[in-house]
Length: 229
Image (cartoon, rainbow, N blue to C red; front, top):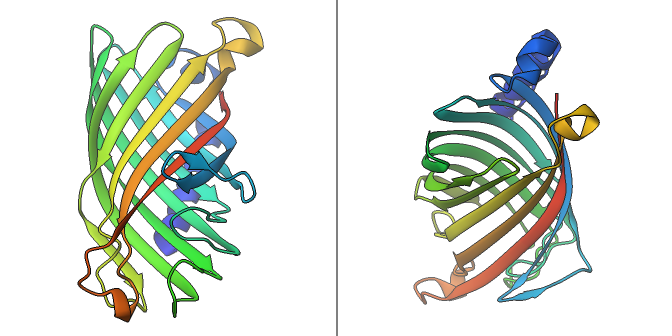
């Protein structure tokens, strides 16, 4: 929590001191974003429990490098693998990608803290507090009006408080896409965002499931808006 709070303060401080010239040339551009997503099992999304997201970040997009640092807050009302009646997730992300003829290759890491209450997927576990520090690798492609990234989350520090397993042992692919609306006027600041997360998670959090090797697949899809200063 302290780490996340310091990161958010630093990002807001950067927003305050970046000049308009820096923001407009794309070398060092702060941004804010927001959106909504839906989660389900397999390919079936549930619209009954949407997850809302807001965030702030700084992007550096030069000729050969794409750098990004951001902090995100999600309402994290889960549905799908784990159904919950409330909660939230706080995440800090950092990434770097090398650009070559439109192709992107790189990775980064994130820290997240997920609080879920009223969890009903596993008998005997009414809530959980999950902390993660995870690296990821991936790549993508960027054109004049579009940027697509696909990342695979690697193992790292992943713990769930009160559970008898070291995290959920999930395998996750994150797909993100940004559509640039234009290069002049207000449109040059606006981007439409789309996201897709494919996850296979360990379900053996409760004592009776330990060692069973049960896994459950989930999918999360979302869309939103990003305003780049």
